[in-house]
Length: 190
Image (cartoon, rainbow, N blue to C red; front, side, top):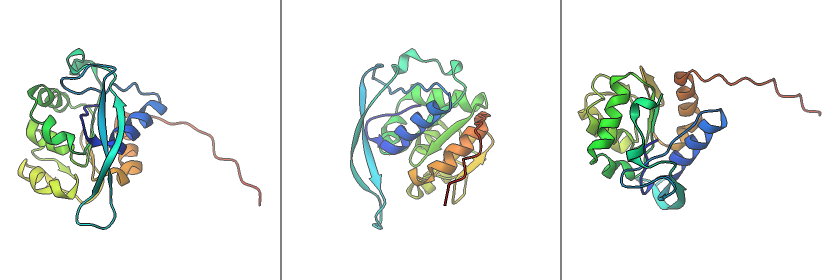
């Protein structure tokens, strides 16, 4: 997972924890930060305004330094949204890492403003995808076709914002081949 200061809190925390809950090991990294250091997150709420309301989120502890990880050692990539993608796309090492996952046809999940990084990496040409609606023009300019809803196209799963988590995470787990086995819930007594 590539994250950074003022990435969207729910879009970092929820997939990070959900993937671990079903048995995946998740490494969270940020350029110029080491494992054990924290990034600050932001919570974006949708209250009927023209855009989202932003408040301070949590401190999220990174698991590794960006320079410690080699993309070839990983099976998949998560690129959350928020404001972090706006500046993370300026790091060539971030773009190189993203390009690896697309060149190797590995699963990638991106949500909200995360596709700004994918657009900057030049990997979206020909995909059908979605993102936060304010990013639509940017991802279309990068060569994709816009879809209004959670979308899986090849190795890429995209969502518009954290309210898409149930469907977005489920589609990503399908792409990963994750099998969740559980018994039927017990009937409740009347």
